[in-house]
Image 1 (cartoon, rainbow, N blue to C red):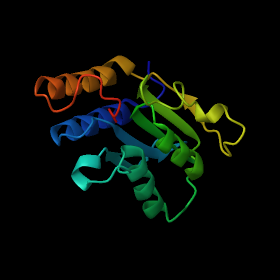
Image 2: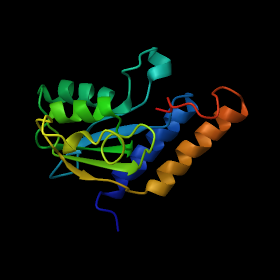
Image 3: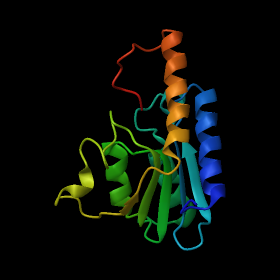
Image 4: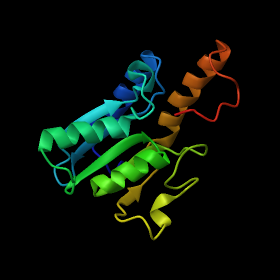
Length: 165
């Protein structure tokens, strides 16, 4: 049994697939009301499309959620991200003051919550949201694996490219 409603997980998967079809790394984010699970924002990576290294799914979803709510702090809201957030996105989610970060696949290369920098373990981090990781990790991980296998097969990225997000 999932701890999140299936419709959030399914929508995140659809958005990640949409990113992949747009030749973007298949990562998605959905921000929702912590109590009711009502979504208020959703996005997928658009770094290639927008020619912007900051256009990660989490950043775009935070921007949309702030516009939707007219708030600069997203207290009372949580996020589901299809891949463990990187340091930039984990920091942004902390500044946004989300209640909880749920994520799908673990990211051993650029993840910054359970992997790498583990930014919420540092005393300098002002807000430390609850973290629940590994939700359908295999399913979301396979989507990423297939995306990068296809890229490598078509020689669009080198085999050991650390910039996979």
